[in-house]
Amino acid sequence: SVGFEFIKGEPLDRILDRQLQAGDSKGWEASIREFLDRILALKGQKEFLMTSGFTRVFGQVDSAALQWKDGRIMTTLPVTDIDMIFRNVLREPEGTLQVIDYEWTFDFPIPVAYVLYRCLYFYLEERNRRKEPGFPAHKDWYQEFGIHPAMKEQFEAMETSFQKYVQQGAVLMRDAYAKEGRPAIPLS
Image 1 (cartoon, rainbow, N blue to C red):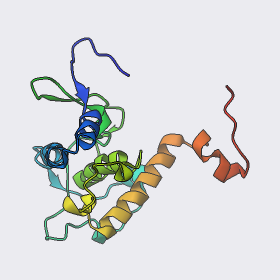
Image 2 (cartoon, one colour):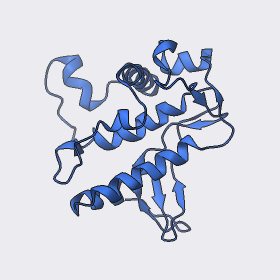
Image 3 (cartoon, rainbow, N blue to C red):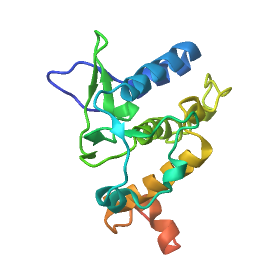
Image 4 (cartoon, helix red, strand yellow):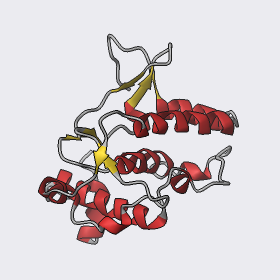
């Protein structure tokens, strides 16, 4: 839990979880759409171009796969916080949304769609919410926001490269077994 003296709000992921638990799939979908549509509507977007900064952090990607199916160009922001995931967004009582984590903010082009992908990925996959009661499984939520399979595959590769960049060669406890071939036992 995190406490902020000046911000009184609830993380968006908890609001979404509560809506799922209550069986409010329409409210759940509306909450997700509201936030992701806000990201898509951010001002100052321009055409995405791959740069050396981008490839250093996210690796080389297939530009052809980073195209919207409807022909729109892939856009970027002048500065992008890729960690605007649902648990890092607080909804204040009057409805204002506050992003509380700016650690992974970059000033080189990053596709705005990748931010959408991360929002969905870290919400849907992290705790495998797809198996929770009340989850509206009748839709592919990535495709619902235009992230088609080839694009999703590129975003998965970008996320893998980003995690390697963040880890800087360190082996996380959760990855130790796969690397070392034996159980990793926490020091505690």
